[in-house]
Image 1 (cartoon, rainbow, N blue to C red):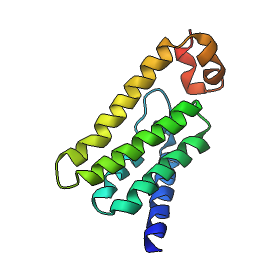
Image 2 (cartoon, one colour; image 1 turned 135 degrees about the vertical axis):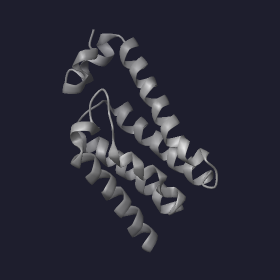
Image 3 (cartoon, rainbow, N blue to C red; image 1 turned 30 degrees about the horizontal axis):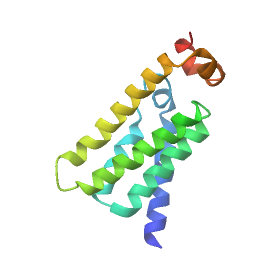
Image 4 (cartoon, rainbow, N blue to C red; image 1 turned 60 degrees about the vertical axis):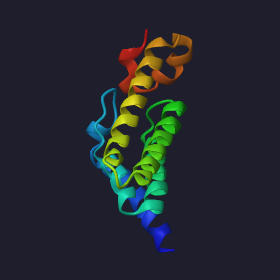
Length: 136
């Protein structure tokens, strides 16, 4: 029961940090202070992995920004990063995985946004203030 509670607290802390620093958490260039929590699986292995995933998912859904593939894909990348941080917690790679995976995801989203035809991206991006500059 303590693990469930700890996982819930990690998820809640992620959401609170994202919205406390929302000026930097959303937009074409993001700096999420809450991403520092992706190192928690080094200390709290099972509960931190789930807590980070749920926290990222909730923050992305509650933000109202971005298309569904970004909301769920970004959450999945954080889940994989948290798991790999746990898996390699006794190695320096544990600290690198969240950075590498988030950089890969951000680059993939940028390429996808710039390469998709307007009929696919326009519906989602026209509703998002942060994405208007990438419209064709």
